[in-house]
Each structure stands twice: as structure tokens, then as C-alpha cells.
Length: 136
Image 1 (cartoon, one colour):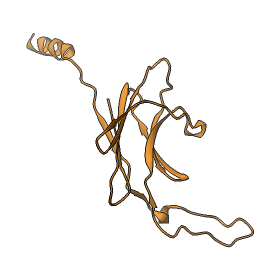
Image 2: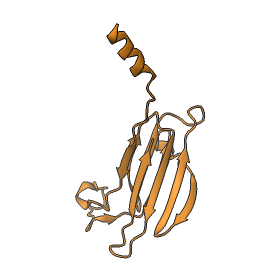
Image 3: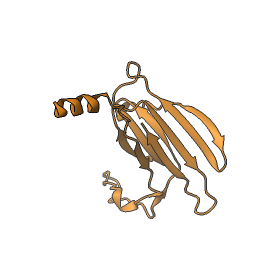
Image 4: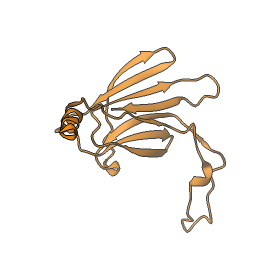
């Protein structure tokens, strides 16, 4: 009887969504970029790490580049962009993308996510911004 009561109580407790936090690396390591020979040149090189420029959100397959536009507001030292997801409108695959010029890093966001907040803090030195995402 006590176990049944405990199970019933646990089933009726409010469930809180787990928050997912992701932060972009300040620089993309040059050694991770492989340039193959193209027949005219023997090799290519990337002489330095590539600095972070910004970040964003994509939905659907990354190959389609379904970039989202959220509601943006300026805050001291940068801006915050909010994204809301309607399970009926948006595909289940959601991506946080870090921009390094023409190179991008992407990390998948939990499928059950309903809202995300992207924070972009500009810095004077070093110039790379802090870009992080918080989702629930």
C-alpha cells in the first residue's frame, strides 16, 4: 500500500524540463581543417586558428541551412536572441551553430526543446565574442 501511494505521488509531481547549455569555442583549431590537393596545388594550409564571429539556430537537416530568426534585443555588451519552437511547425532536429567565417561548428539541440536563448557578448579584448545557448 505504501509503495502504491509513493508511486502515485511521484507520478503527480511536476516535471521540470532539463536545461541544455552549449557554448561556442572562442577559436576553431586550424589543425582540424584538412585541405586536399585539387590537381593544380599539392596542398593547402590554414596558418592560424579561426576566431569566432557569432552563432545561430538551424532547424531541419544542416544541408538545407534552415536558419531561424528569433526575437532579438540589445543588452549591455551585446544582444540576446530568443527562439520558440512549435512541435507542429518546426522539424525535430534543431541545431546550435557557431560561425567562424566560412567554417561552422554545429551541435544538435535536444528534440523536445521548446525554447532557446542565444546570448552574444561582445568583448574588446580579445575580440572573439562569448556566444552561448541555453534551451529548455
